[in-house]
Amino acid sequence: MAQNPFYVYALKDPREKPAKTFYIGKGTGNRAWEHQAQVDDSEKGKVIQAIQDAGLSVLHTVISDNLTEEQSLKIEAELIAGFGIRSQGGMLTNRVKPNPNNISKRIKINIPDGCYEKAQMGLSILKSAVMELAKANPEGIRNSDAAKYLGLQSDYGGGSKDYLSYSVLGILMKEGRMARNERKKHVAKSE
Image (cartoon, rainbow, N blue to C red; front, side, top):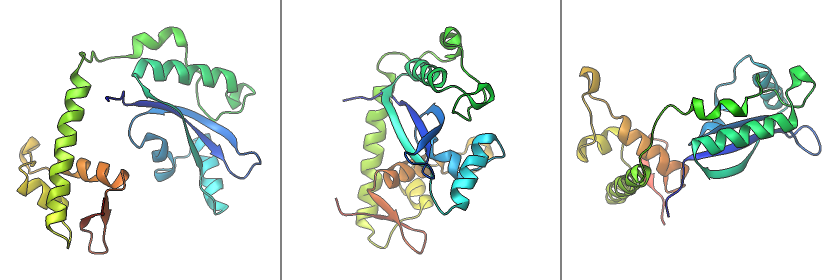
C-alpha cells in the first residue's frame, strides 16, 4: 500500500516531567532528527544544545504520518496555533505561526496521480538489488561498489556522482536492514 511521504512531528524536552513540546514541524524522511544533527543558534537550537549538555536526547514524536504536503502544513499550522509560540507567550520555539489561509499557495509542485507510487515501486526494486549485492559480499560493500556495479552512477555536473546508491543505502540503514561496519562498509543484516 502506497504512503504519502509527509509527516508532522513534535520535539520534546526530556528535562521536564512530563516532557514538554518545544517545537512542531513537518517534513519527510529524517527531517525530525536533522535538528539534533545540525544544532543552530536559534531558540530551538539553544534548547536542543541545553538538552544535549545535560547528557540527554531530544524526544521525537511523529504526531501524524502518511500525509500529503498540504495536509502536513495544515496540521502543523493548527498545532502551532494551539501551543502558541514563545515570542507571543506560548510554548513553542517555532519562529513564526503559519497562516492556514496561505497553505495552498505554498505548494509549488503538481504531483500527478500515481507518480509517487511509481517512484516507490522503483525504490523497492533498487533496495532489493542493493540488499542482494550486500548479501553476496558478506565482508560488506561500499557506496561506490553499489553505484558502479549496479549502474547507478551519474555524470551530472561532469563528475561521477554516487548519490542515488548513497540514498538507497541510507534508507536501508534507517530501516534496520543494513549496518555499517568498522571498515566503513555496508553489511546486510539477517532478515
